[in-house]
Length: 287
Ligand code: 13P
Image (cartoon, rainbow, N blue to C red; front, side, top):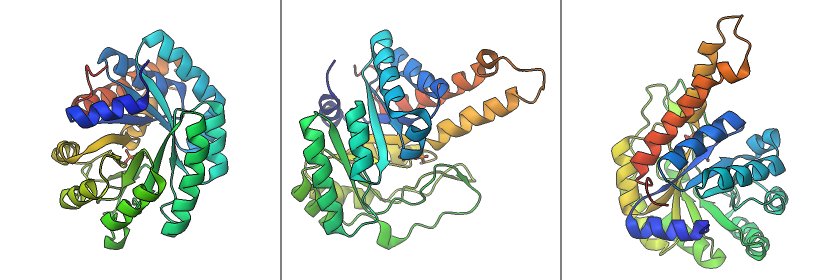
């Protein structure tokens, strides 16, 4: 199997993005992988610290291995928004393919220092590292009932991004260009700052760029961002809503007690969201 760096380069050359789909339950994991295999798309499975604490780091790695072999599709496992070197080290030791160090709330020098520490450890094990510059709005992936305000000072500063990638030599960089975790109640989030993304693209050279908070983002913005140079897009809230909404409906009848029956629609819903994102990102038939 080719590694994630191969697919990121391919994405850059051919103008598509690879989806990172978060999960904390096996039905979600299975739904994402089923669709990836059907559409012959490389897949990144993501777990935050919370999601991986619930699921288990070793369990996630073991099931990635099983699904990789059984489904014959490149599946990569990423530790999303790791806040400390210690937690990322655990994920690397467990066998994750990629780790994301989120030092965005730290002063730049401190962010650079810890990123370098993560990279030094990750390189020895062949693990790919994502860093972050600029603060991506809202920590949790969920539906928001109020309009979300993007603060100008939280957007990625191109000069800082340039300094960060030059000093750390990070493989991927997460950017803040008006994206945020979760979805506004209207279902469609505000537009991305594609003008800023262009500046960041120029400032960061060949570094793969990552768009977090992909749920609810207008589809034209996603297409525009990929054209400018986003190679990885993270999706969580839309998967959570599809999964929980179907489960809630299936469980309204108190006589429904068979998990493989009441989870069937939730599985299909996760497959549906994943399929639509793979088509939008252009990663189908790229394996
Ligand atoms: P959404 O929940 O908005 O899709 O964001 C997911 C994400 O960025 C995970 O890192």
